[in-house]
Image 1 (cartoon, rainbow, N blue to C red):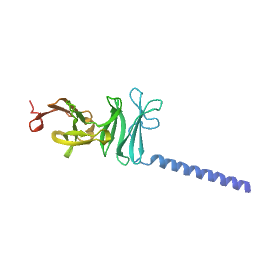
Image 2: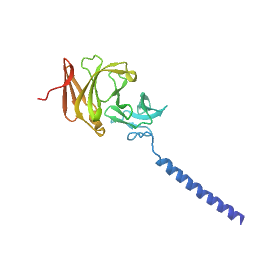
Image 3: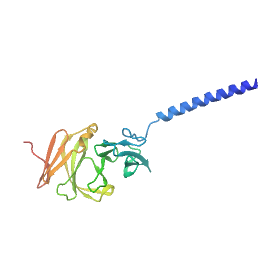
Image 4: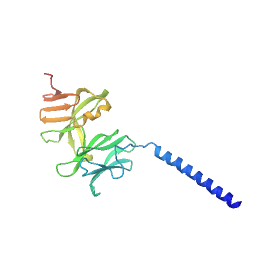
Length: 217
């Protein structure tokens, strides 16, 4: 009789343990993530189009760290992005570049540089054809209007900063859902001419008073 009672208690304990484990596993798998990742960023990371490189994202000291490695695991580049883990962010390949989207620092490319290294740059940027350290950037302004900023760059990489020399209203309205239109949207073909490609082609020219939108033909 005592053996039967003991066996019954063991069975009951096993069933209870299984229920608790199942409930705990369900809660853990359904809990919300503080910083949702982009597609396929798990395990080894997401491969580039030719599978020659992999990108992974990690969180260290509350900041998003992006690592790019070869198939054999050798680290090619790693950058602490300054994007906070508490913000909304994602990481994905866009051609040979890695696109970091962050609700607190904006959208950036992590991309190869001509000298063989890697650099991090704002997605809506064009360098001056004069190679004088000046850039043009397009960003969201008041009410969703795209604003064109002309600036001088000081420093390098994540330690660089901009001295904005002029801001120009473009008249182009975008919603946040249309943010992809700002990726690689600027072209600076000549020192006197800038082109914004977003909901059409918009030309800006250098005048005696600074940059202005070109008159419509």
